[in-house]
View 1 (cartoon, rainbow, N blue to C red):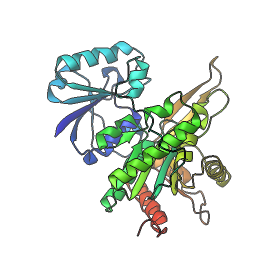
View 2: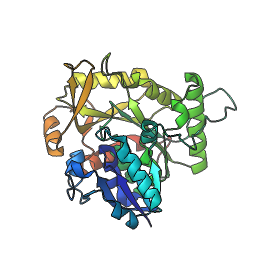
View 3: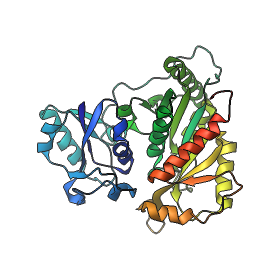
View 4: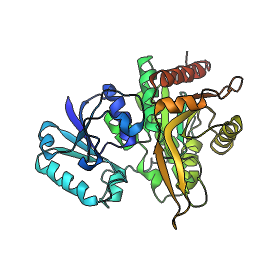
Amino acid sequence: MNKLAMFPMTREQCALARYRADLPANELVYCFVPNHWLFGDKDICVIDGGEPCGVLLKNYNDDFLMQIDTLYIDYDSRIENAKLYTKIIDMAKHMGTEVVLSKTLMRALNFDIKNVSKPHMLATSMLYEIKCPVITVLTQGSHTNQFAVELALRRYFTKSGYRVSQIGSNDASLFFGFSGTPDYLHGNSNTQDKIISFNHHMKSLVEHEDAELLIIGIPDAIMKYNNQFLQGLGILPYIMCTSVRSDFSVLCMYHMLYTMEYLDEMRRHCHYHLAAPVSMFEVSNTGLLADEMSFYFSMKYVNLDTSFVLDSFKDLDVNGSQYLLFNALNKMSIENACVQASESLTSNVQYMN
């Protein structure tokens, strides 16, 4: 097995650590953090707020590079000095360790991204029906446990015997044997060409892998937060959801005190703007605080413990609404959500029986 380490451990990469048993060709041996974070030898739950999982953080040291084959380096806004990245990259290469950079980090460091995926060649300008059920995992923004939801669904349906094709919202998807969001969706081609190209891409993927289920993680937020915090204006979710009709959708949300009216509003937005049938809401371990006093509007993320998150919506009466609220970092909660997703899909005997 290839020995894999990660630096720095971000909230998103905690999902990889929690689902490390599903890595097909890698053994996760180290989860590095900068020394000044003071997280050394603590469970990764101190980063993502989830249940303890037995994976410990390690303060980074060059000497550990001799014990690993691959170092995956991701971007984290808390590391403000880019020289720390370049120092570790240079040292790893000097030690003969393979270095894999996330595309987010490559853009932040102004590195050229090699092997950029190109739009699918358009034989026709039509949209094809995807001949298997499709699950889309949507989000209100970053840090909402979205990647954990995608990996949980993959594990559940794979163990249930289904052949699963998948597009992930996170660059680390490659370690699980599936691709992240194609680069051309972020390019300069017009919206119609992106929609058609992604549709043809998904058709080819499903046919090539003879898939019985397609799971698509949509990386950008479904809508703006306000006129200062735009979050991509929901453009990428519109493109991807218009490309492929979804049979079942999950929305990963920031933590707040929810009401039925708010859930109804989110469901309607996803239905009318994205044609995404959302009935399941993942309540994440992240709360949002708007810093409206600064000259430049900014958002601050607040980490929350899983037990607090679960307690916050246990009294919300969703009976009769067909809604399910869950937390992806609680084992029982996410397992129940996967069962509910399966039951919803298997009720469609046209596809899954």
